[in-house]
Amino acid sequence: MNKNIKDNIKVDSDLEFYKEKIPSFQLNLIKEYFDVDEENKIINLNINVDKISEILDFSYGKKPSINSDFFEKILSLITCFPKKYKIIIMVAANDLEGYNENILKNILIGSIKFNFIKSNLSVKRKNVISIIFLLIGIILMLLNIILLKGNIFTITSNNQVWVDILSEVLDISSWVFVWEAVTIYFLEKIENRGKILLLKNKILDIKFIKKDN
Image 1 (spheres, rainbow, N blue to C red):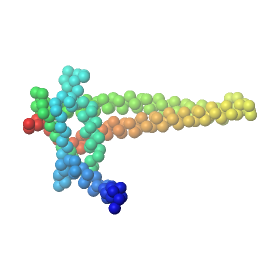
Image 2 (cartoon, one colour; image 1 turned 45 degrees about the horizontal axis):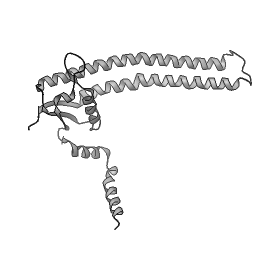
Image 3 (cartoon, helix red, strand yellow; image 1 turned 90 degrees about the horizontal axis):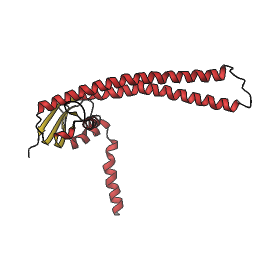
Image 4 (cartoon, rainbow, N blue to C red; image 1 turned 90 degrees about the vertical axis):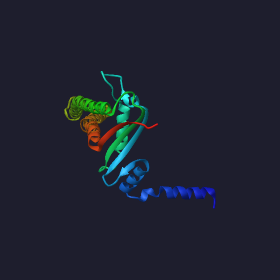
């Protein structure tokens, strides 16, 4: 048999996963990469670093916080895990650089609280922006209605094209502002708060340990 045909057969067989149900395929794939306790519905997520400072941010404040890259990495992984499963995170470092587990947990909790406050303030600011966008959209809609129905000036064959163009621009612009207002008010609010709630609800425990060399 031709080698290319053999390779194609192997690839086809490897891609048979698409026939599986998503939950079972998802769990089977996760079990290849992580330790899974199916009975208690717990996934053990191991993160290895050389120095513990790799996950810390010293750029602001009087004490370190957990850096945003670490949070984003955790969030990106958690969103791939089955909904019913809790997560135990094990951060293993060659060098804890003088920190112990209790101090690191306090840093983590403080960082989550700080991010929650930042998220709430960001949501409030975006609420104001969304209201402004909505008002601009409504004003543009009213201007369009006045342009077409208000008899501000006589529409003739000479200016009909320009009136139509202006009306189209006002119509499109108004809906752009309205849609942006809805997106900011609802979707971004849900996304920002959802990240914090996801961390709170999914993470069962986080442990910081020194690797055995």
